[in-house]
Amino acid sequence: MSVLLVHPPQVGEVGLQELAFVEPLAVERLAATVPEAAPRILDMRLDADLERALREARPRVVGIACPFTTQVPEVLRLAERVKREAPEAAVVVGGHHPTLMPQDFASPSVDAIVAGEGERTFADLVAYAMDGASLDGVPGLILNSSDGQRRTAPRTPIQDLDSLPLPARHLTADWRRRYFWMNQIPHALVETARGCPYRCTFCSVWRFYGTAVRYQSPERIVEEVASVEEPYVLFTDDNFLLSVNRAREAGELLARRGIRKQYTFQARTDTIARHPDLIEQWRDLGLVCVFLGLEKVSEGALDDLDKRNTVENNEAAIALLKRLGVGFTGNFIADPQWDHAQFAELRDYVTERQLFNSSFSVLTPLPGTVLYEENKGRITTDDYELFDLWHTVLPTRLPLEEFYREFAGLWQAAAASTPQANRRRRLLKGLWQVLTGKVNLAHARRLTAGLKQLRDPEAYLRAHP
Image (cartoon, rainbow, N blue to C red; front, side, top):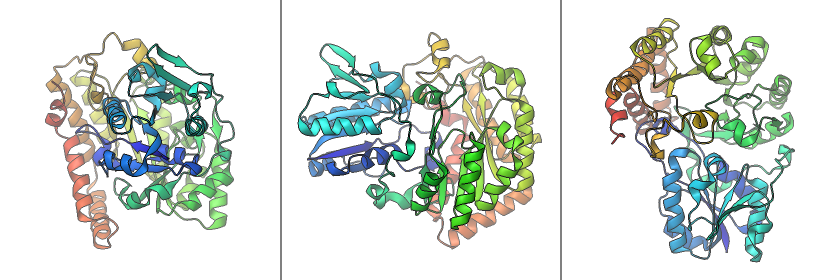
């Protein structure tokens, strides 16, 4: 008897799935906490044979990750398949959506929901299940029964993140060369902190992990980076530079040990603008890209999101990254209530500043967020697969076809703003990656098709009934 951990298949036609295909870090972290239970991982994006995996593992516990709201219907279907094939197995789900909206998983096929971060809770659950004991004694669960849902005792957040084992990446060894972010392949994820002191209305992170930030030590960051074989590393923290001193010390340790990777992280623009020396330090370590939550191009619009930042900081960070030669991707949020003039304002902003690496999302009230609570009476659909940040689930001021024409036009404008020299450089780099085998031709075609789709208004419309 063992434990089977399942990462669900992808859903949806438009979005990042063609541009980013990252390792299933959540289930790798859970698997690392139960080595005595012979855990297995099934990444159903690459191996869809759930029934075979169940026959081979004969699991006592099946954990199904629900990484995104879009995957709620698929996770419920997977739970039903598990119960049908392995009725004795305890079926457990976890993730942001199950934690914040557990009622969506009040299904006879789901035995338990892990509320919040899962490592300690899952390890205890597995121990209880292996012993045949009632799960009522495991803190941090929401249990389903014929009488409804009930919560077990609350679980205190994990304060010492260094005490957690390294992710069980060996369990995804067969697939690791297929995980990528754009042209960064093979690619790995490293999480170094949890929690966020900010309260952006559209974000569920601070509601899931809390507003008190818990950090891995610089030594632990370096230990994990050193354990990763892949040349590309993305730090998953929402703000890797939130502790400037920690980031600086981690960089010094990496340099001292001669560890060289190509790094990507997300950071707030106010931190970047205040600490140019920190960005220069990480550039010299291999920093190739920074994700910037630019969100809006006016102070009032940023205030509406409770972003607690300024356009001035955004522009200062952009100028600094350009000067230092560090790549960046700035994300902007398009509001369903925008008219043609507001779309034009963002197009002009991106074009004038040559923000050719921009990305765009649609303001989406993700379940569990403040934005959801404020707008749930206005949501136009109960189809969770549309909550993907690229489709609108709120009424639009423009006719829907025009809204998506304008939204696709943002992607078109970003591509058109690429200077000719940068286009040549990208083309030569892409050819070099293909010729040297770092990126195969099929992968290059996949990226090209994915970007083309984001610029096609018809691709968005196809998902609407």
